[in-house]
Image 1 (spheres, rainbow, N blue to C red):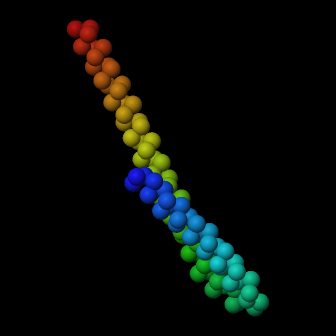
Image 2: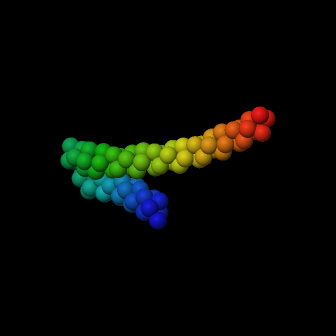
Image 3: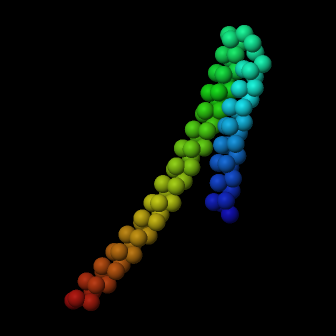
Amino acid sequence: MNRLRAVLVLAGILVAGFAGFGWAWHGAKHATYVPLQVPWVMSGGLGALALVGLAAAAWHIDLARRDDVDHRAEWDRFTEDLSEVLAERR
């Protein structure tokens, strides 16, 4: 359940980031004078980029932790098998 909740939160942050890109584009589109477009691009675009980057980094950390758990379990199985083989040889 916690894993599903984490994925839903990350997906929500990612959707919010892309919505921020749309909000920035929409605001800049309606400003015909270029210096008035800059605040839209800076605030909306950079904020959206930060949200997308946060979601991508958190997702990467989650995947790396799951891979680490699998690796540790595999290593534990290997060491148990090795200790059994060595115990049989004595």
